[in-house]
Image (tube, rainbow, N blue to C red):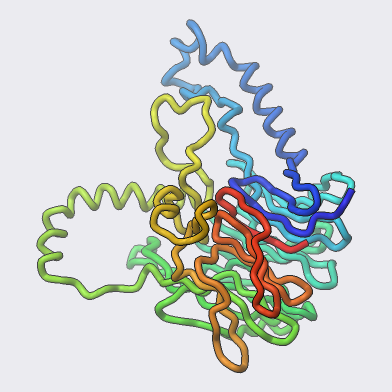
Length: 386
């Protein structure tokens, strides 16, 4: 069997692209869904006939624990140590874990927990250490590392911040990552976060160095090349305050009660989607169907896919899901230059090329600047060279 050259995550599924494209299904995830189906069948009497009349509204939820609604999502992917190996993170509503699949398709569970969410997996150059993002229920996120076999897990950053998307610097002594400080009110409640900057962590000393920051932009998914060039996605910072027109103040005052109710719901719905992948409310009659896939989470933003396709540019059969203001930037000693626009995810290849996605297609940009399209997909969340 030929080795794939590219992996990508789309709608919570892991796809491989090469001479023969295929989709990877987690054996662990399949076993969880089968177990959910067994439990559902065992308790089916509670949601049908007279049993349903007795149990509805009491101890058993109205959906009856339908296994078709059991959420299993692959959230990130990385190349493994050996040819043909893949590492990926997986989540359900209850647990999060890291898994390895070898060239034969055998899956090994490395790590799992119900205490937090583990995402953005990255393997060190030596292949003996994994770095991850650790998302906690209090809205903070730290960096974590563990041995390549999943043992000796520990968090290596702390504080009231979002530390995400660690990547190893060639040599294995440093990690680069994106970080943003959290804002809280006088009562300690979350009120927002600042723009993401790029920092570098020295794993030996614990020292931090800021490599890039912009008060008007979020800098996302940083990666460093062996020559020292820094790549990241730059997007406008949504939390920046704008000048207010007096007429706007009057309008906002009249609409305040309605907007406040809507804002409260959307606030909690945002974090429900961010940390569990499920909205707070579902439409009646949706039981037994898969979730609505017209929205997706992109770097913490909930994006309406249909609207994005209408508003953003791109090829006719692969419109961008993010605007052109989302730019892939290369920062070097000579300055900063924009490599591509409308970029949702990217990865650096060993030959100096870049693979990037606008959410609908994946392109390769060679060192000489030549661009070629590799594939067209649907709601591509992450791409990775293998």
